[in-house]
Amino acid sequence: MTKASRVWAALAAPGAFWLLFFFVVPFYAVACVAFGSIDPIFRDAIPQWNPLNWSFVEFREVLSSVTSGPLRGVFLRTVAYVVTAMVASFIIGFPVAYYLARYAGKRRLLLLLLIIAPFWVNYLMRMLAWVNLLSPSGLFSRFANFFGVQYNWLDGSPITVILGLVYGYVPFLILPLYATLERLDWRLVEAARDLGATSRQAFRVVTMPMAKAGVAAAAVLIALPMFGDYYTNDLLSRSPSTEMLGNQIDFYINNSSQPQRGAILVLMLSTLLLVGLSWYLRSTTRIGRERVR
Image (cartoon, rainbow, N blue to C red; front, side, top):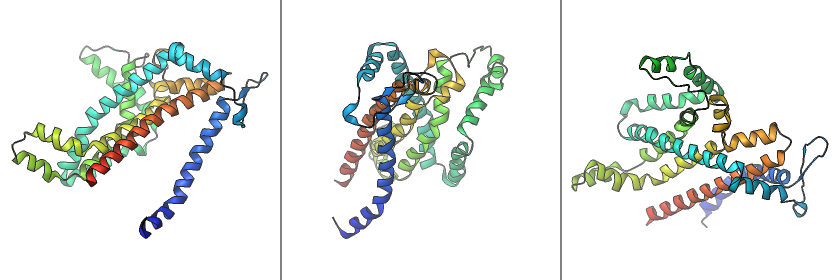
């Protein structure tokens, strides 16, 4: 390790320790609740701080419920909603990021500000605006009725929940994609065109391989919060037929006498997300090594 790398490692150490500490400690607290016990009178969670005394009975019951019980449908629905919302976000967001990076020119700053502008408004307020637009007397519903489309968007509709997820998280996808595409060497694309490749071939053979790191980062960045999202569904649906894992966690922790189950679902969801995060880290590391070569 060179002197410069040691200096930068020392400067990064406090921040890294801070982030690690405030990840490990809450995660351990959740595990202590998940594998602890329940007060027989008040039905509150009693954390078991000693890992040697953890009980895994409730964990096995929840795992059985997720794999073959009532929670299996909720888990599969959550995966389906997140995957569908991610695909729709890429369909919407990738062309926007590509245009910003390559063709926006002097309008780039203005367009970036317009993309960032929704972050200045609270997420809850933006979802409430969607509720007003999609209500039977809302502007969007009246516009659809003008063309003969009559649909109750807020009556437990999966489409509404997915659209809400896309609307809420697509800016988080556009920004890392733009940051990656903006740094690409577009002369390589022009060289491919000069060598006889069509625009589609140049995009598939040159642009996409160079943008893989940004695509992976954007996918992880929106997938992680989508899996734990519950307020989008609460505001736009409030139907058991569209409940996601986040809604189940919120129910068990805040509205039931089984907070252990909520903590166990948090651990399961965190494990699933850590698998996706490890895939992202491996893929970006591999891409970095390929660029060095």
